[in-house]
Image 1: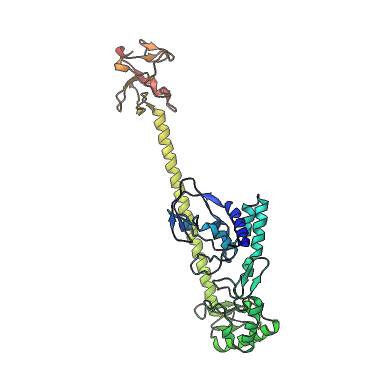
Image 2: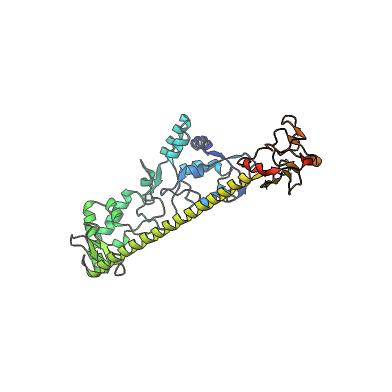
Length: 412
């Protein structure tokens, strides 16, 4: 590595530090394809995912990869030169079927390193230095200005790669093919691509005079060979890929509606299409209405169930008390009769009215108890060890139910 490359590497490393994040899962390196397990609380660079995109915006990891048991990224060894290689345009997009090079997203860089003015300025300057590509025809470096998505835009929208030939070389190549009538040669010059260059792209590459020649030859070729081509009364013609199966077509120039079969705008074919559209619209409205009705009925059903459940809980609270024993707290219901209560769950004996536990079945009541009047104690003097918190509190209980209780003489 020479001095210039080392200086660039140093700037890239400073920028890379801003993208370090904690890593908690094993990491599979997208460069060397090895899997690494790092110590707990380790930090790892996420530059490759956050700050890079290809010219069509592909992220370098799918959602499924990021949510797996093993995360994907760049290992510590490969990460040493990764950022500099991206800056130099040496890393290809990982998405299947995409041969574009990934580039640094400047907006992300400015957002993440905004507080470090020196590093940000050095890194942006470095990006400007490497805004270039090598033209495969005249074999020289072409520098560009502005948006890289436009600068790297290939000859056709369907190309799966970045631009490899400059406009100055594309122009004579395409103009020579057009003047010679060889329209089949208007292809992307990439040997692995060779996709046809569309009309609008040709317009941007050739002169106005040559484009007029191209349009005339293209129309003549289309009219002579394409059975799906139709003329509009405005003078504009176009291809209708739907054919007789889907006969409706709209002129791109004047927006007039036509029938591919009978070449009219008010024929039975179009009327049937309109009728089918209306039937589809009505069916969609009916389906939506049925869906919302079912949804409303289900909400009402759930509301009634919630109200019934709330009423059951309220009634249970009104007619039940909890066992005062700290290890039990089972709900107990009672309606009249003897106030001497024995919990069926834990066997604890207590007074239903004042809820004092009868240890060893010895009756004891609070002095405020309405039925226990012989063996009483104050609330402050009561030993509450073994009692549950708030043992004498039963929210919602109807105390009028206790008016029908009594005790035998020995339990008073």
